[in-house]
Each structure stands twice: as structure tokens, then as C-alpha cells.
Image 1 (cartoon, rainbow, N blue to C red):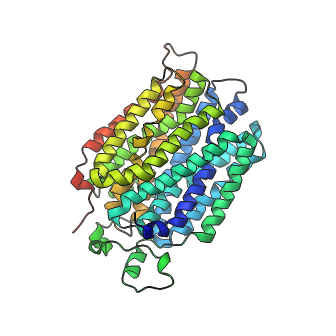
Image 2: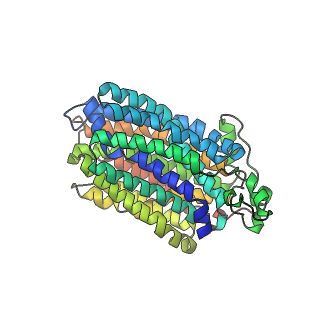
Length: 445
């Protein structure tokens, strides 16, 4: 990315950092808070596992419906206007646990978090990536997506460091305050972009005071949406199955990217929803050990997205890098599943240096196949597919994890669910191999 592009995205990157800082600060303590509220004094709690799975399923179902619609609305009304939704919705549940963490407060948090996460979790990433696509030419878009993801990982690292040294009560209070600051900063400083419609108006104009708020021009070969890609069917309301199918079948790249996204998200959701309970049951992990593990993941991921990806994409291309990242993701899940000592998960976490590149590679591939008027819609559909996997994942991994971690299991292999998550990622890897490098290049008439 050039200095001009980084400067144009500066306020968005600060917003993303603050958003992730507030959202992820509670991650290291949520397992202990949940267990203390529902099953005090125990290291295994099936109720906590099932409630986590139910929340993940309901959130994914809501995001499946809302994210493509919000992404399409941002193509018409601007990214900033729609980013206000996730920025403000994330404040309420954090404020509840900042006030109290007893059983009653936990259930109040659980309900509000489930409802607000439908809006906040998927749409923030979808709208931000569409914002990046508005501002950065497609030739450097993969690196820009990597930088954006790296800044999000940096926010994750900073929040985990804060949680590592703060008591539980202060953690939720600081997180809620950071969420308020995030919403205020976004409203005050983030510059609006009206999506692809701004490209044609800004490329042919002379310098002005408003020039800094306009997106960077695309290359001359992409001066119109018709030249950039075939038009995708518009979404004016809640998407039907036929509308989603029309988008995904409009290109073989979209179809394969959808399959890769689904199975990779299925495995990732299964891994994330069960890993902390697995570590609690097998190695008696506490808040500080969770924080140490998340720090390794966050620091490694941030370093990879900010430095490794911009270096590797020009040499390997998104498709080859995607294959390598999926191999690392498979190995990570399998190593977690057979962990024989408390330090093995730390070793498995180091593979994040490659596995974290899966999402930016997929997002860059589909972004190049869509025109400037369609970025919000396409990114929203990819997020919707990921949300579909989040709906299905708890139906598979929640009962499997509860059974494997209980005393009723006939064999001692508590990591079965983690191994199944690895096999789901293996399907995504097999699909990614069939994507030819020529397919991931931008469409040209």
C-alpha cells in the first residue's frame, strides 16, 4: 500500500482497532465468568457449552439474513451510515456485565449479546472491507485487506494484554467505555464514502478541498462497473435462496470461494467454540493461561497480516497463499486435538502466522471479481455464508464436545470435536486446490 492509501484509510484503521479492542477484551474472562455463573466450582459444564452453541447458532442465523442486506444498503447509502449499527449495538451487553456478573446479569447479557451480535459481528467486517475496496485499487487490494486484518489483530492483542492484568470487574468496565469511545470516534472522524458511485465522480475531477474524502481511483481499465465485472443481481430486501444462488453461481470463482468459506468457517467456528472448554476440562486453564494463549495468537496473526502477507501476495498470488494458509489451519486443529501437555496449545497457536491469511485471501479474490458498485453486496454474501456455517457448527460440535468432555464417554480422547473441525478445514483445502490462478484475476470484457 502507498502512503496516500494508508492515510486515506487512517480513520477506518483506528476505528477497527478500537472496535476490536473493546470487543475482544472480555474473551479471556468470559469462560470463567460463564462457568462461575452457571456451574460454580466445576471445570466441566454442559449447560455452558450448550448455551454457547445456541448463542452462536442464533447469531449466525441473524447475520445470515442481515449482513447481505446491510452490505447492499451500504452500496446505496454509504459505508459510514451503516457502520453506526455495529458500533453502537456492541455497547449494551458490555455495560450489563460491567454492572454485575451474577447469574441474573449473565442471562441478561446472554440475551442482549445474542441479539446485538446479529448486527455487530458480521456487518463490521463486511462494511469495513467494502470501505477498503472503495479506497484502494484492485492491484493492491489484497495487501490492503491484510493490513486491515492486521490492525484488527493488533486491537485483539492490546485487549488481551489489558485483560491479562485487569481484574474481571474492571475488564468489563474498561471494555464498555472503549465501545463508547469507538462509536464516538467513528461518528466524528470517519469520512463517508458512497461506494462505487464515487469512483466515476472523483477520477475525472480536479483537486479540491473534498478530494481527501473521495476514494482512490481504480486503474484505467476499471473505469466502469460494466468493465470491471458482470453486474450482480441487486438485493432490495431480505435475500431469498434464489437471489443468493444467482450471486454465487454468476462466476466459478464465487462458487468455489463460497465452498471454501463455508467449510473453513465451519471448522473455525467449531474450533473456537470448543477450544477453551477443552483446555479447561483437560488442563484446568485459568484466565491468565487463556490470555497467554490468545496473546500468542494475536501477536502472531498481527505480525503475519501486516508484514508477511504484503510480501508473499506479489510473489505467490492469493490462490497459492490461500492453499498454504488452509494447510496450516488444518495442522493447527489436529495438533490442538492431540495435545498431551499444557504447552502444546501454545505451539499449535504459532501456526496462526499462516492460517490467519485465509480470510484476507478469500476476501481479496471475490473483491477482484466484483465491480465497484457491488463490493458491499459481495462481501456481505461471503459473510452470510460464513454465518451459515456458524449456524450449522453448534448443531454438530456442541453435543459432540459436551459428550467428549463428560464422564460418560467410553474412551479418553477429549479432542474429538477439534479433530472434526480439522477435517472440515481439510474439505476447504481440497476445494481451494481446484481454483486455478487465472480464475482469481479480475474479470475483463
